[in-house]
Image 1: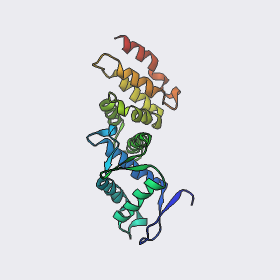
Image 2: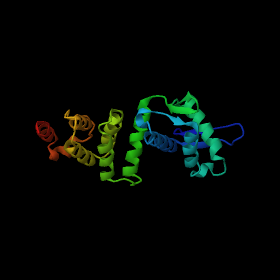
Image 3: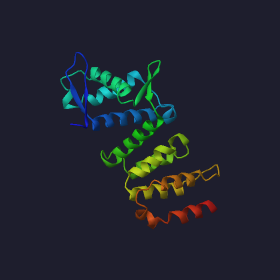
Image 4: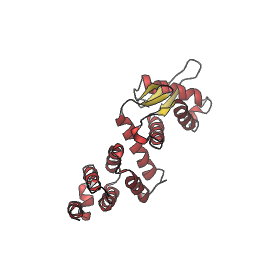
Length: 206
């Protein structure tokens, strides 16, 4: 099937990884990276951590139960570097996404997955993510992507939340972030009831 990629190593049997599994692993890698000390600004992960994350996921797949997940993880890392060109080796046992766009996309996708599929966070949990990070410029693209990925109704709740946030610097950074997120909303008619433009104007005058 066209959407399946073969992974091969000389002493291993050929196996197939669904593209959804690859995406899930990359989401987890990006999510792990944003939780590190340097956060999204860092875009790096140690080789042991990368191998561990992939191995743990691979161990849950029926197609790899007869194989060593650590071996498959090594093959997959090589493939993501040389065939898919998503990861790159930085040296000194560190890897990174070849472009920051991949990190931001997969990080946003993981939050959306946890919200919509796994249900491990609710809308209040998403609001907390926005409340914690809207002042951090390295998070702006991730927050915008999340807004564009989730249902417009929930995006509206996020936008209302941002409008009410306080920018102690007096530079109305929360309103600038609100405007950026508003541009990402897929269905503007779904949030017409919150009178976004008027609220932004009113809050900027306060």
